[in-house]
Length: 442
RNA sequence: GCCGCCGUAGUUCAACGGAUAGAACAGCGCCGUCCUAAGGCGUUGAUGCAGGUUCAAUUCCUGCCGGUGGCACCA
Image (cartoon, rainbow, N blue to C red; front, side):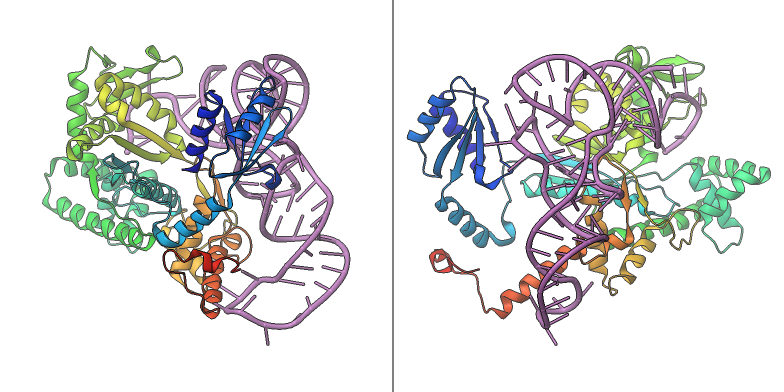
């Protein structure tokens, strides 16, 4: 990178470390500016001016402490040459070669449909993975499925009734309003865990397969490819053992549950239950187990978990526990959280409950972009990726599909138009080493 | 109550502690019409409040105000 070169050049010339090297906002101020001490500014400027390196065109001094560097034309010429030669590979690097990374994201629940909120981890997680890949790392994208739990029981219960609507939504409604249904659902939940009822097992199997099929359709449309899948049911076993092994050391018994008092290690954290008073591992224990399973399935240098902001504090506690249980795993684990996606104009058709389904948003955007799905997907991804990942996003349907302004549609269209202009100009990229002939081409 | 995150033009977003806080859309003014579906140029306009640290603060620290998320058996 040119910045490293400049830094080295400054370090060698001036013998000073850690001088701020910034990119001026104003073009006339040069391509880079070094900020030096006002006491040595004059002599630093003279030294840099004398020691000019081959990639520096000129050096000027903006008192009291800015020394502005203008890069040479040769540098820009070489950059252009590199861009044309490398084509789509421009910008790739090898500096993370051999580095093994796992990026876990999206993590839907069986029996629940993907909704628009899932686009956040999908876009952010897969992009993060792409950035690692682009830098040469060996990357696995992982998805952690919640395959068992009350949501499964609600859906299975509903599947036993003959209904047309979404079983999970129907089951949830019944669970909240109908006492006898609630009892039955709890009963079914047990049966799912114990595999004690063949009818329940069959419905569970059919329903979960249907679920996964639905997930895969959305992943495919959105360009997501998972390499590894993990399941809450497997994490539960490993997690329970891990927690029980560390009772007394990390965890303690309290009111029949096994808890972790994180505030003893960091006053800003709080206590959380890892195994509840019925002996069932909670999400916390499962995540602990998951960390171990991950490292066994794919020994890695870094494990990134992408979740929503609301799990931030939860993860701080979890990571504090992981640090005590397994310092090595803790060092490799990083939690990244994203904001919520909501629609600016809340009106949109929704087939299920009060959430907007993932595929419905694609259809809605598609209907506004002349029916081209690639354009629609690009519009959605761009709306998410254009801003800071921790912040909430107001998804404005109109703006997202606008051919003006900061939108994916605008970018794709501008690119198409640029290609078209090139085509009509009969311009063809020069062969290697012929850059000089293209100078002056607008 | 405690902990975290957020607060920047009318709106949606930018800005490794650095120079004159950038864009986009909307607005206003002038000019124009056929390069896939965007017309061009110009222009108005912002750091929630009060302190502090620093040569330099949107950025770091303290307090306040406003919004939001989390705080034992849910995931």
